[in-house]
Length: 113
Image (cartoon, rainbow, N blue to C red; front, side, top):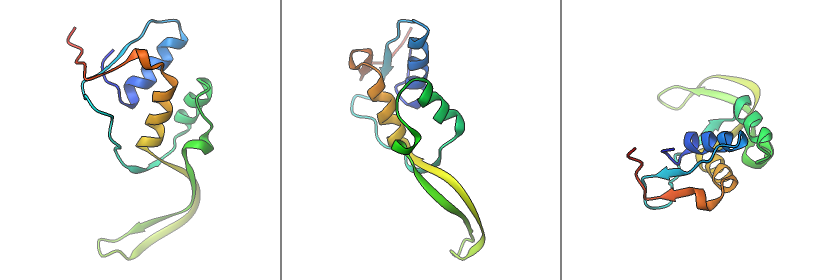
């Protein structure tokens, strides 16, 4: 299968659970680079991680207790008290990547057919 980012790794792990032989091919030759932070942890991600015994929600995220909406000049336009768990692309990627055996992940390889 092609693509060694979050989608490719998630697909590979799910397919392995139903006894499929899977190899992941990532065309980038080096280590995958972070794609940023400030991601809200969705219930589907937590369920997937638990189902595959990868990691607890607390290991990849931190709680945020307030959401603020800012105007272009930086003033608070509106805020609400709400509990959300926040994470980063890198935190999720590392956990998924660590769950897939290294011999099944191929950097610098382009899948052509």
